[in-house]
Image 1: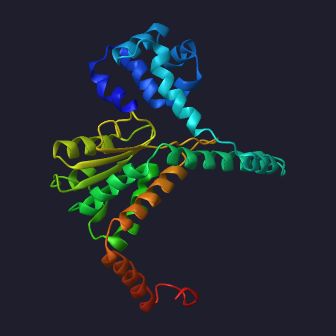
Image 2: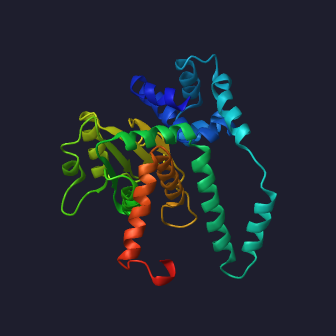
Image 3: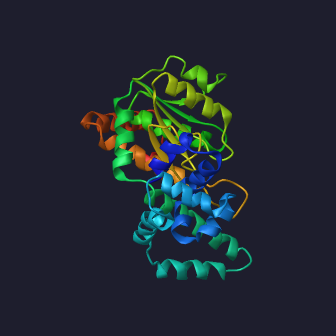
Length: 286
């Protein structure tokens, strides 16, 4: 449903497009809220959602939101033990509420990441990386460390994974010679960084396979990506949470290793063995 919405965005009138983007970015609310409440949140009139439903081939709005309700219902689970644990955290002194809020949000974000992503989607992205000539991993700002972590782990198994931008360069410089044999894994979260958007635009024009990671489906990072992953970044505090993004990248790396042969396992073993011989690890870890 969300894919159909995004594909039809350019053909919609401005108000209906606004409603469609709201639906793409808030699918759970469509299954829960009244049409009037959705309209208020999206900044449009209620009949705009009716027009959206009919444009997509549904008889009415209720028929349109039925798949969203079904998805929401299948995702519901009860976690009484977790709830009791979080409540106990909130009772532990002055910082108890902060501790419990952070713990609850981190768990919710990871759950949201895995609920919103399928094994087949991750496998397809992993295969693209394994088969690539070069995979450029782009993250700036809060995503900078994630990009370098992923590239660091990846190079234990595959030589072609590179973090960008490199020192003194722009992302568009790093991918200037990239083509259909290459992959760009790019991530950015609201407010979206212009250099990441520019790199994705350039990569798409050069027929590079784009893997986009962001916080909404209508984000300029994921909207036109060949493989798109949408992650929650909620936090009770001022910063953007990277817990879900970390979990997704670690899982993607596991899929990459699973898609390769025995020679990659040998390569990883050799990587660590060489470090032990050179004294990189402490004697207790050798």
